[in-house]
Length: 164
Ligand SMILES: CC(C)(COP(=O)(O)OP(=O)(O)OC[C@H]1O[C@@H](n2cnc3c(N)ncnc32)[C@H](O)[C@@H]1OP(=O)(O)O)[C@@H](O)C(=O)NCCC(=O)NCCS
Image (cartoon, rainbow, N blue to C red):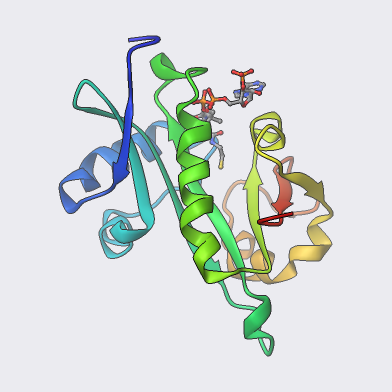
């Protein structure tokens, strides 16, 4: 499948099962998502296709900053590309599409928690201490079943500022 042309589009409900399966296949790298969660947030997903087959997805959510709504952060989530289709630029194109979509909201910054820091560095993200994203740790990492402590977990917190 390598080097075949790909296309991006907003997800539809008919993609939900393929998105679920793709995220499941990357459970070591991604937070698992129930089907109901994918369906409820289908409007926040973009997908990539090769020859009509879904090969990649990416999504976002808005993390409220309590007491400072203008400083809300967008989190990029659920970024995955099928292994046969990697290093073709699909992951980059998916994240760039999410970034251009969320730029309209003017978030303070865009956050990702990731085991793929080189990929996000190539997209303009840089690592920050996890102590700077306590709202994310309280809303997500606190329910983690893989690591007892977010500060010893190898996942990196990275941010980029849109337009910077
Ligand atoms: C991370 C992931 C989405 C990258 O998808 P991809 O389509 O292969 O990425 P791209 O081809 O767009 O790569 C863009 C750039 O990122 C960097 N990059 C991508 N994968 C990399 C890797 N494994 N090691 C080092 N750099 C990497 C490179 O700079 C690359 O540019 P280049 O190919 O011109 O050198 C994919 O490897 C994946 O699905 N991994 C498992 C799930 C995951 O870790 N998701 C991220 C967590 S949020």
